[in-house]
Amino acid sequence: MSRDVPALSGRHLVIAVPFVFLLVFFLAPFFIVGKISVSEMDGIAFKDVLSFQDGGVHLAFRFANYLTLAQDALYLNTYVTSLRYALATTLLCLLIGYPFAYFMARARRTLQPALLMGVMLPFWTSFLLRVYAWRSLLTEGGWVADAVVGSGLDQVLLALGLIATPGQLMHTPFSLVLGMTYTYLPFMILPLYGNLSKLDGRLLEAAADLGATPWAAFWRVTVPLSKAGIVAGSMLVFIPCVGEYVIPELLGGPETLMIGRVLWDEFFSNNDWPMASSVAVVMVLLVIVPLALFNKAQAEAAEAGR
Amino acid sequence: MKAAAFNRGFGAGWLSAGYLFLYLPIVALVVYSFNDSPLPNVWRGYTLKWYAALAVDEELIAGLWLSLKIAFLTACGSVVLGTLAAFTLTKYRRFSGRTLFSGMVNAPLVMPEVVVGLSLLLMLVSVQRALGFPERGLATISLGHLLLGMAYATVVIQARLKDLNPQLEEAAMDLGARPQQVFWLVTLPMIAQSLVSAWLLTFTLSLDDVVLSAFLSGPGSTTLPLVIFSRARLGLNPSVNAVATLTVGLVAVGVLVASYAIARAERQRSRDSAAARRA
Image (tube, rainbow over all chains, first blue to last red; front, side, top):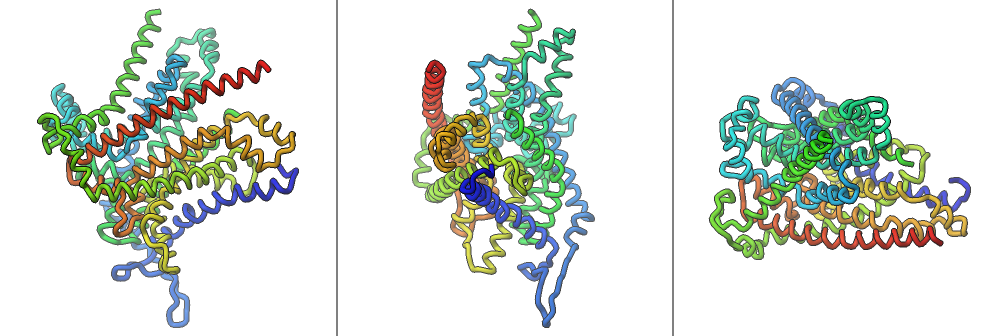
């Protein structure tokens, strides 16, 4: 690439513009959050960590917020709850989405663009409105509520501990996980489909020739080869679910307090910016390993097919 | 033979159930927007009164207008930054900070929005304390959406850039085109379709966003999703259904037009490449 000098200067500009934008507006803010999370509230505003008083520089780190987070059962429970619901949602999405993507990829070639369009279309209608729609489907008298109660499925949900009273589906762990699964299902299907549709059919023929049953070929050839899609899809579901705010607020209930909601309340209701910042820092720490996995999967996907 | 037939039937059943799951809420929204009862769950006959009410709903209309302005800015900015980022990631394999760069491009796709919103706001507040600007409102909301939109635009454009035949660009260079000319005359026309999809995708993303907007909005800058969200929070509200139905109708028309245009472009392209192979 270094054969001609003019290209080099253009190249620098092409890299620099998005790079600097992200450094300033994505990375730098995280450091500011980190800084504010260790500063002290002073009346209605927070004090600066670094201050100049009496002719000297004062550094006042305050880790009280983190101590509260570690000791207060409310926060601890919220983190555990968030991780649990995010995990349940991811597993459900995988369970529904994997066969879905698999059958999509095996459908007739001419049919596939339409099938793909069918998964992407809901993206184009407001996510907020679709989540809101589940409210009317799940409140008493709604279509889904009637179907579930009519078929006696609510007894099963009751036995599983997903709802507390028979017939009462809204504002329960059930409605929350259903809403999150619904919202994030396309994020699971799309990377899986992208992966499975590129699968070389000859590999399955080879497996069959070597005596593998279709079932064995599926588990020992198809699934291992789609690992990258599984990782990317799972991370696309899991990470945003951990910090989800809108869905728990609209579909969740008193027992489904999630961390995104706690952050929101600390910020908007209590105006406690340092506390909200500490909650955010811990949330980032929780998702940093899945985030690294996701970035690795994305980088590998970008390398593939060259 | 029997197993294959069973597999096909099972596959078709699974897909149908999946699509039913994906589309049921949308159907429900549309149906209940015509419901005469203020309780969206109790059917009482057809009406158009909720649509009539929208026309005089000033809060909603002001929100829509602001949201459209923000979405337009976001989509344009996202396509420009997304093109640069996608270009960087596909063409320049080696530069210092590449891992950091690709990490930062991808992270907003999954990073919980409450974290992105909070951190960007706290930074803007710090800047405001030091410099006296920016005021929270249209500009700050657009900036937040741009961060998210850029990530999505990059993914869409990168997928297209990766599939391009590099020989076309090399041929242009061999024929004496400067790198800039190669980009404007060869690369850009070939990725134009992905730029349009990226623009539309980021436009709708911005038009839909609640969390970033809530953190970054100031007094008097309430976007449409914020209006809808505050109403939906309080309970079921027929005006929300009417807005939803209008959105669905608009999207349906847009998709029909777009898929017709894409199908036509696709036919043209395969005719061209067939002609090129013959020649």
